[in-house]
Image (cartoon, rainbow, N blue to C red; front, side):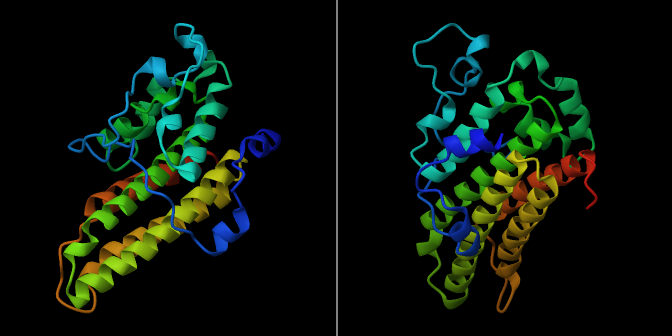
Length: 250
């Protein structure tokens, strides 16, 4: 696994400065369904022929996973490598859908869980709960990056001192969250599940602090990031449950 990870890493990837000094990433058109009432925003096809392993689809000269169409190197790297590593194994050994549904019944929002996991094409190649954890962290990373896009689109609407301060805090917090979820993903690939869970928790706390900031030090304002905070919190709940089921004490 480590050699495969090293071989596929992008040339600009440098784990140490990323972990210590979160960097702003190029924006990404999200492929994540935020909730039951939020549509995909990338306008990309999500059909099985595009994203499932070659063995399950008609033969093509250049089968292209969904991730390759996303114009962002570092998030693209996470998405592509998740797809590659999962699709490298026979889907005949894939975890049964009934197991995913049973898992989701143990979460606080079963419908959200099923919508996120069962509808993600990568789940078709997940062999065990460790693979499902990688997918859940991938979805969290994309959701956080999608929030960064939203922050940039609404920041000019906040011209008052409280609004400017709060949107600035959220921008920094989502940078931290993005960095930590990305590092969590790397650890999950290496089966370092305890560390992956710890890092995801740091990312989740950063997102929550952003949300709480809209009622701190001044009159309360409606947060423009509530949807993303809610989605990341629910995904973190899935990550927590998966970590527990993998035998990690938390």
